[in-house]
Amino acid sequence: MNRELIAVIDEIGRQKGIDKARVIGAIESALQTAAKKRFGQAENIQVEIDPKTGEISVVSKKIIVDTVANPKAEISLKEAREYDEGAEVGDEIGSLIEMDELGRIAAQTAKQVIFQKVREAEWEAVQKEYSTRQGDLVNGIILGMERRNFLVDLGKTEAILPIQEQIPRETYRRGDRVKALLLEVRRTPKDVQVILSRSHPQFVAKMFELEVPEVGEKIVEIKSIVREPGDRTKIAVSSRDKAVDPVGACVGIKGSRVQAVVRELRGEKIDIITWTQDPRVFIAEALNPATIEKVGIDEEKKSALVVVADSQLSLAIGKNGQNVRLAARLTGWKIDIISATEYEKEKAERDRDIKAALAEETEAQRQQDEARAAAQQAE
Image (cartoon, rainbow, N blue to C red):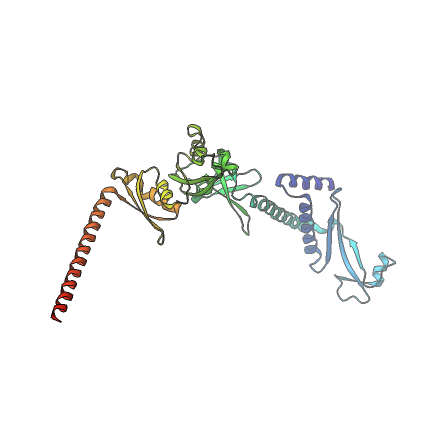
């Protein structure tokens, strides 16, 4: 029995990745709970398991006193000296309890508590391991779907890929392999949940770290990244080495690197631009693939007016405003776009207004001068 217990403890440790000492501690706690249920909560019962032999000792400890007031916690000096002739008042003495005395109910209680304690230890082990990996890429196997959330086997634990963290229109079958961002580790009263994401912008950033050595080595830095999952991502990059073109490094020879990321994202479009401190240039680049003619900025309001050729207007704005919306998020500037025709029309109107205002001002000045001259003549 004792050897079987150690074998079970070793097996639990291997399967669940839990330290052997923790498993033994959980079993000791379970047996202590069972013993107290059998003999009373007031009993000072201690349980120890030899980690080498598996031998279990259950000891009821009592304080030696002159007059016993609490039989469950105290023992008289006379009775104590029947076990130990050298016993003295104030000493603690223990008596072994046979495991058979725990009974069938106590054994069942022990099993339940063991299960709970081992499960709690497993949760702690999962939380400890995966908390340090938050923000990293992980690989798993799809186990199935529950309430539109995919369950993913990561090896040592199961993770959840929630519906809101999935790429729209993406489907999986049981047994499919999946790559995702380890987004969060949540501790709940019932378990530990490992949450994955494929829709988070950081998932794309980590994919570039994987596919582009210069990004992984921090030679090329991802300064900003925004995304509408399943449709388009915009990423701004800069280089710490003047000899390295950040956009070229991310694109790769014949687009090999960026295409590897696009395939993982199931065809999502990716615009890679060079980050710069010049807001005019940065805003123009952010509106890629549209060609920009002029960019005017208001630094105080952090807003920009962008002028594009008439033929480029719809491309600059994008379907349902997606391109300009992502560009605004990428740069942090409010962006308004107008066509060259509209700009020239507004410019002409502004010019007319300015000319009219100047003419009014000139006329007012002329009238003032005439009135002043007349007043001087009258004097």
